[in-house]
Amino acid sequence: NSLLYCYYYFTMGLMSNFLYAIIISFPMQMISFINWSRNTKGKITKLKKMSAGQYVFSTVAVLISWGAIFFGISLFGNSSYSFLDTLTTVLGITVTVLTMLRFSEYVILQCVSCTITIIMYITIIIGGDLASITYLVYAVYCLICVIMAAVRMFKTHPEIIANRKKKK
Picture: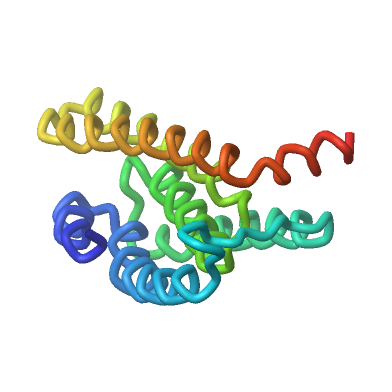
């Protein structure tokens, strides 16, 4: 699906999302598929939890990446959606990396990313592009799917919740 989105992102002028889909998302989806297939117990993929250091590193990396991409994209001209476009791109990259590495935190960050994507499409539609309604509907559908995946993950990996409760 990454390749199909390339066309849409390009025609909408969402250049950050376009570059993400073609350069990062597609290859990383293939790597993730292979990594997840090789790390299973029965039919369930073995997931990992991030350490405190990995949380800090990820947060700093997201902030630096967002700033760099936002600045870089602004050199080519600003669209009305550059802030949200860049933010969804950086969060999408982060989710893809966390997924590829089998970190359970990917699903929570993906919920955040889907929510911001919904806000971006609402903003685009309010700006007058009614053709984006289809993508808004799809973004809402994606959020529902991610929430359902989170529920399944917590059911199949109860240790993730148990370990988080112990840390508090």
